[in-house]
Length: 263
Image (cartoon, rainbow, N blue to C red; front, side, top):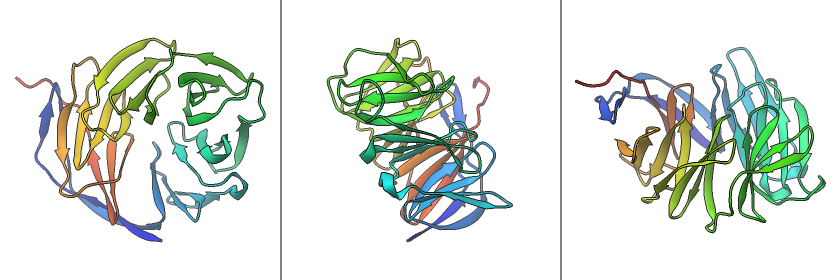
Protein backbone atom coordinates (compact mmCIF):
# COMPACT_ATOMS: atom_id res chain seq x y z
CA UNK A 1 0.00 0.00 0.00
CA UNK A 2 1.04 3.57 -0.57
CA UNK A 3 1.21 6.46 1.88
CA UNK A 4 -0.50 9.71 1.07
CA UNK A 5 -0.61 12.97 2.97
CA UNK A 6 -2.64 16.07 2.41
CA UNK A 7 -0.30 19.09 2.35
CA UNK A 8 -1.99 22.44 2.16
CA UNK A 9 0.39 25.19 1.19
CA UNK A 10 0.57 28.90 0.37
CA UNK A 11 1.02 30.42 -3.06
CA UNK A 12 0.41 33.87 -4.49
CA UNK A 13 -2.95 34.79 -5.95
CA UNK A 14 -3.35 33.58 -9.51
CA UNK A 15 -5.63 35.54 -11.81
CA UNK A 16 -7.20 34.35 -15.05
CA UNK A 17 -10.22 35.64 -16.97
CA UNK A 18 -12.38 37.09 -14.18
CA UNK A 19 -11.35 34.42 -11.71
CA UNK A 20 -8.48 34.11 -9.26
CA UNK A 21 -7.17 31.19 -7.27
CA UNK A 22 -6.44 31.61 -3.58
CA UNK A 23 -4.17 28.89 -2.19
CA UNK A 24 -3.87 28.76 1.60
CA UNK A 25 -1.74 26.82 4.09
CA UNK A 26 -3.47 24.02 6.06
CA UNK A 27 -2.50 21.14 8.35
CA UNK A 28 -1.48 17.84 6.79
CA UNK A 29 -3.36 14.54 7.04
CA UNK A 30 -1.78 11.11 6.50
CA UNK A 31 -3.66 8.30 4.77
CA UNK A 32 -2.66 4.73 3.95
CA UNK A 33 -4.43 3.60 0.79
CA UNK A 34 -3.97 2.19 -2.69
CA UNK A 35 -5.96 4.98 -4.31
CA UNK A 36 -7.41 8.32 -3.23
CA UNK A 37 -10.97 8.86 -4.47
CA UNK A 38 -11.99 12.25 -3.10
CA UNK A 39 -13.78 14.22 -0.42
CA UNK A 40 -17.51 14.80 -0.61
CA UNK A 41 -19.46 17.98 0.13
CA UNK A 42 -19.87 16.91 3.78
CA UNK A 43 -16.13 16.51 4.30
CA UNK A 44 -16.01 12.69 4.29
CA UNK A 45 -12.86 11.11 2.87
CA UNK A 46 -13.07 8.28 0.30
CA UNK A 47 -10.29 5.92 -0.67
CA UNK A 48 -9.71 2.41 -2.03
CA UNK A 49 -7.56 -0.30 -0.45
CA UNK A 50 -7.40 -3.85 -1.82
CA UNK A 51 -10.32 -3.02 -4.13
CA UNK A 52 -12.51 -2.07 -1.15
CA UNK A 53 -14.10 1.39 -1.11
CA UNK A 54 -13.85 3.19 2.24
CA UNK A 55 -15.64 6.27 3.51
CA UNK A 56 -14.13 7.92 6.57
CA UNK A 57 -15.95 10.53 8.61
CA UNK A 58 -15.07 12.13 11.95
CA UNK A 59 -17.11 9.49 13.75
CA UNK A 60 -17.01 6.29 11.70
CA UNK A 61 -15.48 4.45 8.75
CA UNK A 62 -17.70 2.59 6.28
CA UNK A 63 -16.68 0.19 3.53
CA UNK A 64 -18.08 -1.52 0.44
CA UNK A 65 -16.75 -4.30 -1.74
CA UNK A 66 -18.02 -6.52 -4.52
CA UNK A 67 -15.08 -8.63 -5.66
CA UNK A 68 -17.22 -10.53 -8.16
CA UNK A 69 -17.40 -7.38 -10.29
CA UNK A 70 -13.63 -6.98 -10.62
CA UNK A 71 -11.68 -3.77 -10.12
CA UNK A 72 -13.40 -0.49 -9.21
CA UNK A 73 -12.94 1.77 -12.24
CA UNK A 74 -14.48 5.01 -10.95
CA UNK A 75 -16.39 6.47 -8.01
CA UNK A 76 -18.59 9.55 -8.53
CA UNK A 77 -19.22 11.62 -5.38
CA UNK A 78 -21.41 14.29 -7.00
CA UNK A 79 -24.31 13.20 -4.79
CA UNK A 80 -22.97 11.78 -1.50
CA UNK A 81 -26.40 10.25 -0.83
CA UNK A 82 -26.37 8.34 -4.12
CA UNK A 83 -22.76 7.38 -4.89
CA UNK A 84 -22.05 5.92 -8.33
CA UNK A 85 -19.46 3.13 -8.48
CA UNK A 86 -18.56 1.84 -11.93
CA UNK A 87 -17.02 -1.56 -12.62
CA UNK A 88 -15.88 -1.20 -16.23
CA UNK A 89 -14.62 -4.77 -16.71
CA UNK A 90 -18.02 -6.20 -15.84
CA UNK A 91 -20.06 -3.41 -17.48
CA UNK A 92 -21.89 -2.73 -14.23
CA UNK A 93 -22.85 0.31 -12.16
CA UNK A 94 -23.59 0.08 -8.43
CA UNK A 95 -25.35 2.84 -6.54
CA UNK A 96 -24.59 3.23 -2.83
CA UNK A 97 -26.22 5.25 -0.08
CA UNK A 98 -24.37 7.51 2.34
CA UNK A 99 -23.28 4.56 4.50
CA UNK A 100 -22.05 2.58 1.46
CA UNK A 101 -24.96 0.17 1.44
CA UNK A 102 -25.85 -1.12 -2.01
CA UNK A 103 -29.11 0.42 -3.22
CA UNK A 104 -29.14 -0.40 -6.92
CA UNK A 105 -27.09 -2.51 -9.32
CA UNK A 106 -27.36 -2.11 -13.08
CA UNK A 107 -25.75 -4.80 -15.22
CA UNK A 108 -25.64 -3.40 -18.75
CA UNK A 109 -25.02 -6.93 -20.05
CA UNK A 110 -28.53 -8.03 -19.06
CA UNK A 111 -30.73 -4.97 -19.64
CA UNK A 112 -32.86 -4.43 -22.72
CA UNK A 113 -30.80 -3.18 -25.66
CA UNK A 114 -27.39 -4.31 -24.38
CA UNK A 115 -24.73 -1.63 -24.43
CA UNK A 116 -20.99 -1.68 -23.75
CA UNK A 117 -20.31 1.21 -21.34
CA UNK A 118 -16.91 2.92 -21.14
CA UNK A 119 -17.79 5.62 -18.56
CA UNK A 120 -20.66 6.05 -16.12
CA UNK A 121 -21.37 9.01 -13.85
CA UNK A 122 -24.19 10.45 -11.73
CA UNK A 123 -26.91 12.28 -13.66
CA UNK A 124 -30.10 14.11 -12.78
CA UNK A 125 -33.49 12.57 -11.88
CA UNK A 126 -32.46 8.92 -11.44
CA UNK A 127 -30.25 8.90 -14.50
CA UNK A 128 -26.65 8.12 -15.32
CA UNK A 129 -24.46 9.81 -17.88
CA UNK A 130 -22.94 6.94 -19.85
CA UNK A 131 -20.65 6.76 -22.84
CA UNK A 132 -21.67 3.92 -25.14
CA UNK A 133 -18.52 2.36 -26.54
CA UNK A 134 -20.41 0.43 -29.23
CA UNK A 135 -21.67 3.53 -31.05
CA UNK A 136 -19.29 6.13 -29.52
CA UNK A 137 -22.20 8.21 -28.27
CA UNK A 138 -23.03 9.98 -25.03
CA UNK A 139 -26.29 8.80 -23.48
CA UNK A 140 -28.54 9.41 -20.47
CA UNK A 141 -29.69 6.16 -18.93
CA UNK A 142 -32.79 6.13 -16.70
CA UNK A 143 -32.11 3.29 -14.29
CA UNK A 144 -35.73 3.06 -13.14
CA UNK A 145 -37.26 2.59 -16.58
CA UNK A 146 -34.08 1.33 -18.34
CA UNK A 147 -34.76 3.82 -21.12
CA UNK A 148 -31.89 5.50 -22.91
CA UNK A 149 -31.70 8.93 -24.48
CA UNK A 150 -28.93 9.32 -27.04
CA UNK A 151 -27.45 12.78 -26.78
CA UNK A 152 -25.02 13.30 -29.63
CA UNK A 153 -23.77 12.17 -32.99
CA UNK A 154 -20.99 9.55 -32.84
CA UNK A 155 -17.60 10.87 -31.76
CA UNK A 156 -15.05 9.51 -34.20
CA UNK A 157 -12.13 9.58 -31.77
CA UNK A 158 -11.52 7.55 -28.64
CA UNK A 159 -12.73 9.25 -25.46
CA UNK A 160 -9.94 9.30 -22.87
CA UNK A 161 -11.73 11.05 -19.98
CA UNK A 162 -15.21 12.14 -18.93
CA UNK A 163 -16.55 14.43 -16.21
CA UNK A 164 -20.01 15.79 -15.45
CA UNK A 165 -22.44 17.47 -13.10
CA UNK A 166 -26.23 17.20 -13.17
CA UNK A 167 -26.70 19.46 -16.19
CA UNK A 168 -23.54 19.14 -18.28
CA UNK A 169 -21.09 16.50 -19.43
CA UNK A 170 -17.58 16.94 -20.85
CA UNK A 171 -15.73 14.42 -23.01
CA UNK A 172 -11.99 14.56 -23.63
CA UNK A 173 -10.48 13.08 -26.80
CA UNK A 174 -6.94 13.35 -28.14
CA UNK A 175 -7.87 16.40 -30.21
CA UNK A 176 -10.80 18.12 -28.44
CA UNK A 177 -12.85 18.73 -25.32
CA UNK A 178 -16.61 18.54 -25.90
CA UNK A 179 -19.28 20.00 -23.61
CA UNK A 180 -22.90 18.79 -23.86
CA UNK A 181 -26.03 19.65 -21.90
CA UNK A 182 -28.65 17.07 -20.88
CA UNK A 183 -30.72 17.89 -23.95
CA UNK A 184 -27.85 16.68 -26.12
CA UNK A 185 -26.82 20.08 -27.42
CA UNK A 186 -23.11 20.55 -28.11
CA UNK A 187 -22.30 23.79 -26.29
CA UNK A 188 -18.54 24.11 -26.54
CA UNK A 189 -15.50 22.54 -28.13
CA UNK A 190 -11.93 23.30 -27.07
CA UNK A 191 -8.72 22.08 -28.68
CA UNK A 192 -6.84 19.53 -26.62
CA UNK A 193 -3.47 21.13 -26.00
CA UNK A 194 -1.99 18.07 -24.34
CA UNK A 195 -4.59 17.58 -21.59
CA UNK A 196 -4.81 14.10 -20.12
CA UNK A 197 -7.51 14.53 -17.44
CA UNK A 198 -10.49 16.81 -16.80
CA UNK A 199 -12.63 17.64 -13.77
CA UNK A 200 -15.58 20.00 -13.58
CA UNK A 201 -15.86 22.80 -10.99
CA UNK A 202 -19.27 24.50 -10.77
CA UNK A 203 -19.69 24.30 -14.54
CA UNK A 204 -16.12 25.39 -15.15
CA UNK A 205 -13.39 22.97 -16.14
CA UNK A 206 -10.08 21.93 -14.60
CA UNK A 207 -7.59 20.33 -16.98
CA UNK A 208 -4.42 18.38 -16.22
CA UNK A 209 -1.48 18.87 -18.55
CA UNK A 210 1.81 17.25 -17.49
CA UNK A 211 2.73 19.13 -14.32
CA UNK A 212 0.36 22.02 -15.00
CA UNK A 213 -3.19 22.72 -13.91
CA UNK A 214 -5.31 24.69 -16.37
CA UNK A 215 -8.71 26.30 -15.79
CA UNK A 216 -11.45 26.94 -18.32
CA UNK A 217 -14.12 29.38 -17.13
CA UNK A 218 -17.49 28.83 -18.77
CA UNK A 219 -18.41 31.25 -21.53
CA UNK A 220 -14.76 32.08 -22.22
CA UNK A 221 -12.85 31.16 -25.36
CA UNK A 222 -9.89 29.24 -23.95
CA UNK A 223 -8.36 27.80 -20.76
CA UNK A 224 -5.82 29.72 -18.71
CA UNK A 225 -2.89 28.30 -16.80
CA UNK A 226 -3.84 28.19 -13.12
CA UNK A 227 -0.88 26.60 -11.41
CA UNK A 228 2.43 24.87 -12.06
CA UNK A 229 3.17 21.88 -9.84
CA UNK A 230 6.86 21.30 -9.07
CA UNK A 231 6.63 17.62 -9.99
CA UNK A 232 4.24 15.73 -12.32
CA UNK A 233 0.97 14.64 -10.75
CA UNK A 234 -1.27 11.70 -11.55
CA UNK A 235 -4.79 12.76 -10.64
CA UNK A 236 -6.94 15.80 -9.94
CA UNK A 237 -10.22 15.83 -8.05
CA UNK A 238 -12.62 18.64 -7.22
CA UNK A 239 -15.03 18.82 -4.31
CA UNK A 240 -16.87 21.71 -2.67
CA UNK A 241 -14.59 24.45 -3.94
CA UNK A 242 -11.31 22.59 -3.47
CA UNK A 243 -8.99 20.91 -5.97
CA UNK A 244 -7.00 17.88 -4.83
CA UNK A 245 -3.79 17.18 -6.74
CA UNK A 246 -2.59 13.59 -6.31
CA UNK A 247 1.05 12.58 -6.49
CA UNK A 248 2.65 9.27 -5.45
CA UNK A 249 3.50 10.47 -1.95
CA UNK A 250 0.91 13.10 -1.14
CA UNK A 251 -2.07 15.12 -2.25
CA UNK A 252 -2.12 18.92 -2.33
CA UNK A 253 -5.32 20.80 -1.60
CA UNK A 254 -5.94 24.00 -3.56
CA UNK A 255 -9.03 26.06 -2.66
CA UNK A 256 -10.55 27.87 -5.63
CA UNK A 257 -12.37 31.00 -4.51
CA UNK A 258 -14.32 33.25 -6.84
CA UNK A 259 -13.18 36.85 -6.85
CA UNK A 260 -14.61 40.11 -8.07
CA UNK A 261 -13.55 41.45 -11.40
CA UNK A 262 -10.15 43.10 -11.19
CA UNK A 263 -10.04 46.80 -11.97
